[in-house]
Image 1: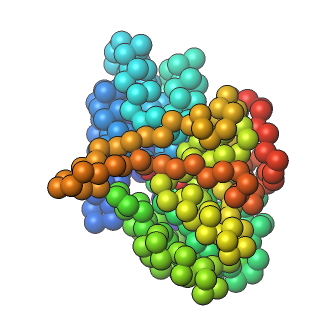
Image 2 (image 1 turned 135 degrees about the vertical axis):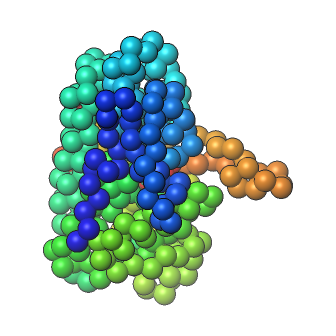
Image 3 (image 1 turned 180 degrees about the vertical axis):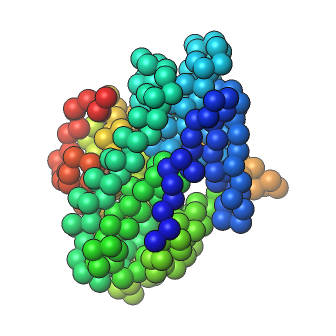
Length: 315
Ligand code: MRU
């Protein structure tokens, strides 16, 4: 089984942060070198690296690089924090690395996120019955998390336990993150089929989906969850068809300071990503209300409603 090495996804070197450029996958495996905090911030903004835990890790490496290079650290913080607004992992990781901007601390943040993925995957896989046909949305694999994956990590563990039959991979518009999931599943040898996310309704009605697993970019204290745009409609569909809808995410994605989904900032990206010809809107995320979520699985275990996330995220 092809393992996506965490260091291949993103790493800190002496004079740069190196990342596998996700904009070029799956066609080309190109390593992008960022030589300042501003270049790391631009890589995050332009989605050379994306996915909530992965952008937190990249920001931590970017800040450690800035410290190494003697950059103005207030400016480094500002430019990295402003790169993308929705995933709370970014602010969390920057808070951690500010306290100790060493390469060792940045690498530890990376290792800890991958370790959380493995632990949450073990919890989430225990929710799946034998011969599960799962549906997933966006990309939650190693690319999005720095290694192993959240929802995709759970599917991977379920496959290793002999519980998983097939994965339906929602293709997401406009940035097509489903192809990244397809690339990862193909490397892992897990059977899958890519579908347009609007095809999910018909396939659920036809009885072809046993459960849905997605990741998250920010989870409010009451369990309302922001994730890739289109997740909310998948959750409504799952509810309508009585299909379990699971969110798999680390505690670093939980934001106890935000009471509910109304307080989650939703990134509006350039309209030209949707249409360069017609007027367009491009919200990159939507919020799934907690009542549509069957369980939220973190490295700490399986959380069920009523959700009341109050504990501080781990140091
Ligand atoms: O806009 P993106 O690609 O950075 O979105 C993040 C995601 O990959 C998804 O929303 C994902 O489900 C949560 S991050 C593991």
